[in-house]
Length: 107
Image (cartoon, rainbow, N blue to C red; front, side, top):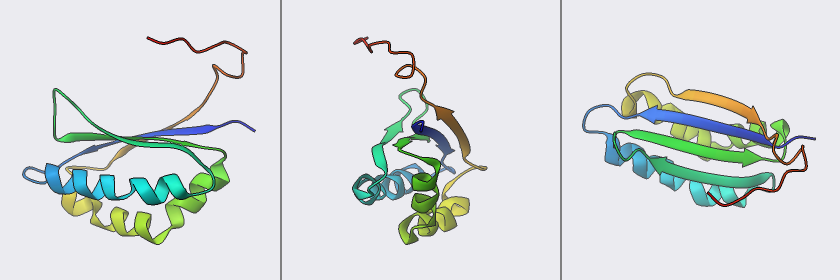
């Protein structure tokens, strides 16, 4: 079974960056506590502070699907239209570097 990695980018509506960031950061403790979570981090773009990124890693698609059905995620998603300028950009990836036996090296 391959690890599932999702990267979601959110662009705040004018004047909503702080509220969007706060809403995203509120998801961290609960998401990290889920049994299938491997990593859950929120990033803010240095050169475009209205752009926020969620980087999440799950043991399986089922673990991610469960996460998306939790009350705190569905509540956040209901607020997205008011907080974001446009739809979030969600990309899913399969981790390949560990599958090849390569060691990760510090950058």
